[in-house]
Image 1 (tube, rainbow, N blue to C red):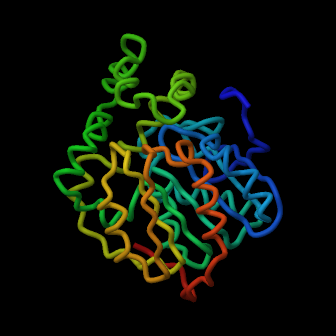
Image 2: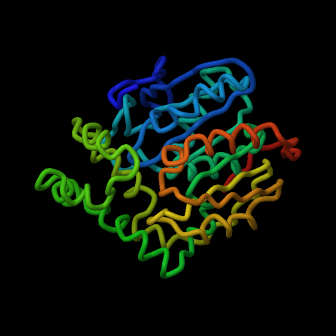
Length: 293
């Protein structure tokens, strides 16, 4: 399979945008969520093995990425809007309750989905990014590692500097990690780079640090947190500190010999972790009403 191929099976209009997605297999549903600057293709090594294990696997291109709509307004990427995209998609597909798996920004969405709508989440697996309650008060070491988030805050300026000299700065930031060659082709599409950066502008702006600290509802689902020792952007403290926000069973896996993109760097391990975790425990009893922040 070449990096130019797509696994997408259909698209649906929800929450004001068109969301392209993969829908494959039968059985208990598993929703896989990618982050920046990926697409459904991040999970290419996990889709078929999970289908073979008896799951229905749904993998969207989240708004701003891949073949989904790319609104240019920053406000279109507010976290609640992003979560509601997944709510709308699963409702359109007739999915009421699912296993939820996320990496990077996909993990951030999965966390929020899990504590706001516990009745809709069976098991939760999050890769690289810990609970937002931990990231709300980052250490100085994490702030240093997250310097790029501040750089991405300047509309127009960030885009120009990232593209300049054959995407030199972007290449230096990403390095040879992830699908780095594919990212350049995808982000060169009209509106794609601004849409991708708007995830950071809508949710990690300097002004966001002035917001009143939230009282996060606990995560009730059995939760698997996975972090890799080669991650240059996120520290281990973000994942290990997430346990205090989880009321359901908690499991932590520290992965060696992998960078930030664990599903690509350690595909077989990622698949084994998911197959061994999903459905391994009964979910905690969910409250009768949807929680709100």
